View: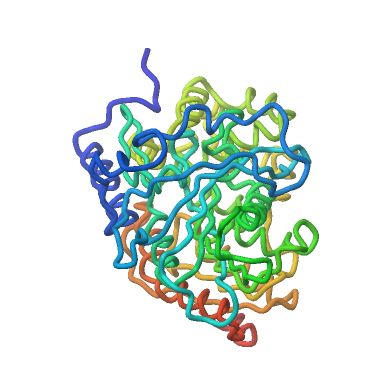
Length: 453
């Protein structure tokens, strides 16, 4: 049976998809290389493998948000012995902790904590940075914590890429402790990942800090400064955490948050992603919202055709690499019964609009200084809506440093306009975070931002 989502592309189309996949993976991976098979054999856990059942949540979770459920040593794929006998860049712990999801229900979240070998040279105790990963996919093997163990993993036709390892290692080199969240449902086997869900993402980030604080034998204390770091999906999560912190986690006082390329307005993001190399992200978000809001299922059944349903099912187990390889440049109009795009379906269905409107960022003043960065050519997570978040926060009285990344157009719809600013600005973003953690005050450019091009 022929399905449009799996239809064999022309030779030119195949070459284009291959180029996009290779380019995207090369850009996001940068200097990260897969570790030799023997690297994990020295780990104190099962060689090269997570302990059996670690990602299976227990039937009952602790009551307190951020409470640890279980931990185990995590072997870092890229590590070297140092002169003092410590592993560089540090010692990692895989963890599972409890959070509260957007329906007010308890949820288990996994992640990782890395105790750095590098000393902290700033004032006060060693700080901790909560890293909110960018888009990893929706399959359980895609999680960022597993990416620390295996930066590039091939499992059949599934390709997972731990590209956040680059930022994590740079943060560790500054002497920061790092805790990474896998988000709700990414890694854990009890549910699908709730991709770009504002509440789930923000809660998971804040509770990761609580979980890190409760680990024994670390150098962070209750007085350690806390910062947030995230780009793309991660930028949306750090933005949300910055807004939610006063009410959800008043005990997690923040020194600053890096909010890179945030999907602040999902309606506009859908339009930017549709037909692009990253169109699979629409499937991941739809899968997540249908799980969280089951009352939307009759609407989905009415509008999504068999090809669309097959794509959603397939994407639910895909990571970013194979999501790009299999679905790049598809249009969501091929997935609907009417030939409308999913963006047009959203506009036509008040119940769906209401769900997406509830995801809007920028309606609440952030509780910490924020650095909002976006590439001026970004068409995947559109530049204008990310910049609007900074404008909205300024209007609410936030302390905002808005930094547009000026780069030439590197190809519409090819993900390069979205990924390249991440790497081009990463050093500046980490320097800004380190300054906040060292106690230096942030400077806001809200006075000039509305007039900037």
